[in-house]
Amino acid sequence: MKAAYTPIYGTPNVIELREIGAPMVGPKDVLIAVHASPVTAGDRRLRAADFPAITAIPGRLMMGVRGPRNPVQGTIFAGRVIEVGTEVQRYKVGDDVFGNAPHGAYAELLALPEDAAFTTMPAGLSYAEAAAIPYGAGTALHFLTTLADVRPGERVLLLGASGGVGRYALQIAKHLGAEVTAVCSGRNIPLMRELGADHVIDYRGEDFTQSGQKYDVIFDIADATTFGRCRGSLTPEGRYLTLFASLGVLLRMALNKLVGGQRALFAIAMPKREDVEALRELVDAGAISPVIAQSFPFDQIIEAHAHAERRPQGDVIVDVAEPPRLRAVA
Ligand SMILES: NC(=O)c1ccc[n+]([C@@H]2O[C@H](COP(=O)([O-])OP(=O)(O)OC[C@H]3O[C@@H](n4cnc5c(N)ncnc54)[C@H](OP(=O)(O)O)[C@@H]3O)[C@@H](O)[C@H]2O)c1
Picture 1 (cartoon, helix red, strand yellow):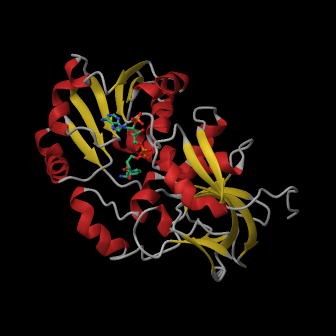
Picture 2: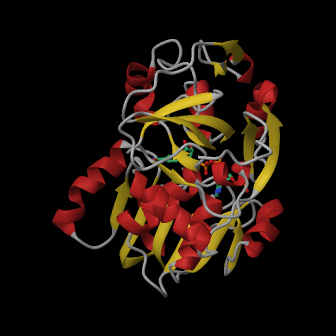
């Protein structure tokens, strides 16, 4: 099968299309023909070994010293089940599915245990649209619900609302009933309004900490500030959420329970099947929809990675295979 191979860390040019062996399908596995996979910030960071701050050394030790330990990258997919193991109960051949994989989605075929973090695709979405959902929406849902428990009427500020996580954080926060302030650069203001933002701040011209406004939740998606700098803009019980581990945040998390009041919260989103099912329900309810900037054919995956680094106004998708014309008969 054809796969995008990342032998060493580096620029998009390190990626090579290679013919490799198809994955083995165990009795509890399903084999998926991948049709679409996005280029996420996580994919770009791993390709470039851009492990932030205190994760620089542990990142390489865990993910591979000179290149990714699993050189076929791609952690999100949408595709069609083409084979099921003898003990699989949840899926049948012909099901369209979407979700997360530990790695290996930049390949024509992907084998996953049936209990892995994927489920059947939302009705009415193309493979590209479905593939755009799990990364940003999954992360946003975990942070805004499990971590911050956002309640109706709360004020939520999103730093980096225009990016891969932010576009979904905005829609999910609105769905939860929050009053949302989106912080982004000026060119993204119309998109933020379209996605439902109540207020928009252009970070190039305005510092939200100087506005006098208080927020129940500040979600620092862009790693643009710190808990310390946000404290004056948080309500007494306010939560500062960050996608980035730092010593300061880890220490503050240890103190959260002891001192009460404002809290700093960091996590690494580790999606399960139930989380992807929750995303499908959000799509079906019309609460979230994807924004796709551009799709690239599989043999242009280098261009796709390069384009994703130019901060496009939406998700960048790799069309790993052409969608099948006819639905397979189970
Ligand atoms: N911990 C976890 O589990 C987890 C999960 C997913 C992602 N992440 C990490 O989270 C980070 C964000 O992911 P992403 O996909 O959203 O990245 P992204 O698509 O690159 O978006 C980043 C956004 O930040 C905005 N930005 C840049 N500087 C800013 C500033 N000073 N103030 C406000 N906004 C600013 C940019 O907006 P403009 O283009 O409008 O300037 C851009 O849209 C990545 O580094 C990723 O690795 C962590």
